[in-house]
Amino acid sequence: MFAPRSGWGFGCLWLNQLRVGAGGAAGRWAYLAGPARRYRSCGGERPLGSEPAVSPPGLARQTLKEWALLVSPFGRLRAQLPCHLAVRPLDPLTYPDGDRVLVAVRAAEGGARDLAGLQVKYDEALKEVAIVSDTIDPQVSVEVNAPLKFDLNIKSSGSGCVKVQNIECDNCKIETEQGTGILQSVKSQKLHVQTKGGKVICLGTVYGNIDIHASDKSTVTIDKLQGSTVNISTEHGLLEAKYLYTESSFLSSAAGDITLGSVHGNITLQSKMGNITVDSSSGCLKASTHLGAIDVYVSQLGKVELKSHEGSILVKVASSLQAHLQLSGKEVDVNSEVHVQEMTEVHKDDGVIVTGLMNQASEHEKWIKADAPEGTVNFRSQSWFQSLKLQD
Image (cartoon, rainbow, N blue to C red; front, side, top):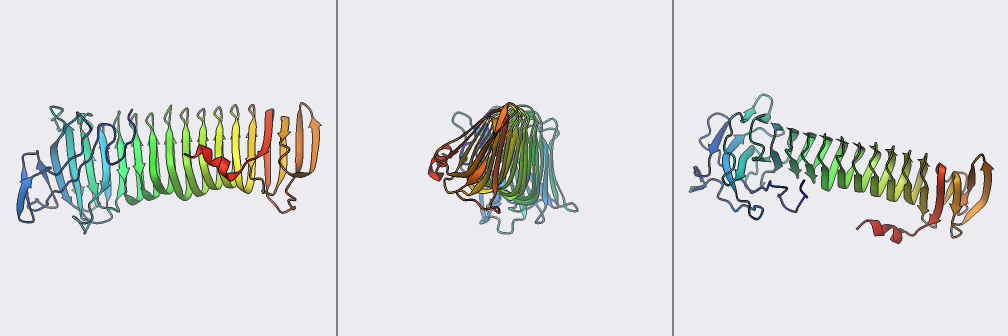
């Protein structure tokens, strides 16, 4: 697969700015075909697609066909393709009214040219731009410049990849099979992403109520999510996020690890066979795994409940934290640097239960519960500065 890079390039798909005139278009839309076709703009004439293009080294790409569609604001893009697709906003200086959707089909020099079966059209009644093909060569790429605020419904098949950048919408739905889905600085009231075997990558900050589902060995990698509710699930792949700022989040994996940086809000984490790591938790945290280990740093306390059925648990806390403690496992190790008052130790069956108050916590303070019936619970203090080592 490919790795995301700065700018508009990803994999073999790289974007360049489209500047397509709509003059002379029949009805509400028209297409302009081939790099040799010319058009007039501001009284001048120049080859279509002649703007400087950024291409990956050794891979020159040519424009096969372009469309300029005159659209109403706040519409929707529907795309169903077996090839790479990239969507970004129009240049606001060139199109201040935001009333165009520009579509370009590109391929490598000497590559595929057959676009039979590709449909690009605008339905004014539905306010919908449709880009649909089941037969287009997977080696081509489709690039779309849409109004800044435009809903998206995108489905790619095969190894087709999807990248969406700097778009705002009420509804954004992206489905891929083996291809990677990349979202960069996207804002959506409802954001749904699903992949059956590819990767999901969120770059910059992604805002909204978010659902991400990754099947098989698909991985989910996130820079920052911010919204009211977040639901993310993987099966055998890694689920990794640097920052979560949400009111409520539910993250789960069947066999993959869950690795989080700084999380805020009410967070629930579940894994059957994977490990769970949280570099810094501020709020309520509930984490459970059957076979994996749990490693959590609690910086600001809500309610924390941790359980590993067959693994061990490491709980690190800020030294000034006030909390009720209930730690149970085959073994419980409380570091002597942690100030615990009224500590009691009860041996039961094959395990031990330790309770106490940290830093003179009152009855109304929050609590930390950790349960590892087949493993060890380690409880120690850690500074906020030490927690930053995992957040490079």
